[in-house]
Image (cartoon, rainbow, N blue to C red):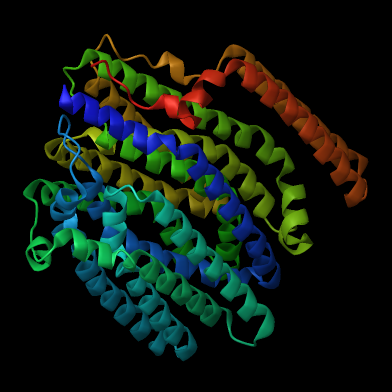
Length: 523
């Protein structure tokens, strides 16, 4: 009884502030997006290709260093009571420091490899920028123990202001240096990343006095305590994070190896713009979903709790699917106009509009996979996680093979097609795990699909958008009147679709955006 009550309260705590969390995330992303407009307009495609390479360095080191430990520390055992903050501190402190040591080793390895390679090529400036960038990455890694503790203590307000301020700083420093100095772009990127890492470290590091207060005189003992369950889970996720990195960034690795710096820059602009929806809306939903699922503490023998958990899962999948469908319907026919308005004719005259159109369709798969994979990672035990790694390795091999073959034939579009193949395989595996997790009489996948009225409205909007697009091409009008017609038609179509969604899909959004959607169980 106590366990049920505590787990319900935890789920409620996690989801009560989710609406505010999402709104603040959206505002932060929009604000930084405006800065990125000025940055991209200043850069040539070749210069932006450098940012793709630096992003790949950052993602590789950070993902391998911390992803597995984050997942392992944030998991809670089903059926356990809500722990005090001191108990949570003792449970995760030792394991939470491991990313710093692993990350330090990876930073040294990556830095040494890239510096030696570029010294041979005679590009000392690039090598110096890499060193600065690796220092920035390690600064960010130093904040990881505090980040994990802030999350197990449910300090989401700190996450909002720290990450918001750090992201703003990175964008501001990049834009300021590009427009006011003669620095090469790689130095601007590295300096901006240092500002991001420093603010992240200082912001989360401000928890240190409170940590000492909670630990009392046992701070050294707590820091050297490694909870066996947390450590085992973290190692399971660490193995999986390597495979997930290949699945997530495999196309970028192929891009850097086989495509020109110009193509890298174009692909970087498209994925940056296309993933705006992913970072702004899907990422906070996935993070909240993982925390809610992992800390709900619902036993598989609790029939009522399992029904509520299934209802929450299907509602989340349905809600993010609607956003993905909107991107798939309205993105491709309007990609050229959007790129010209945002980034100028310099970018819209490249292959970027075609690549962006395909990426918009790919967003639907990203949406579904994010929530389903968050659920699987939240509920699988260590043994199941190790078993799932075999499947993920197979998916990674298929994904990398498809990326190499399709990119040679279709260029950047081929990379997105390969990402789609990998994402479909990941969704299939997640759905299989979900089906096995729930009792047969509880599983109901029919609720994840939008209503018939919504699908008909989306189909009509898709037809109208493409009809207007091709009609304007045939008319060969000037850009300004053509863009006005296209935008007006898109707004009217989107308004109609959103009205139908409001009437037909209201229940799914209420589950996501209100505190009434918390995982409740009958006492």
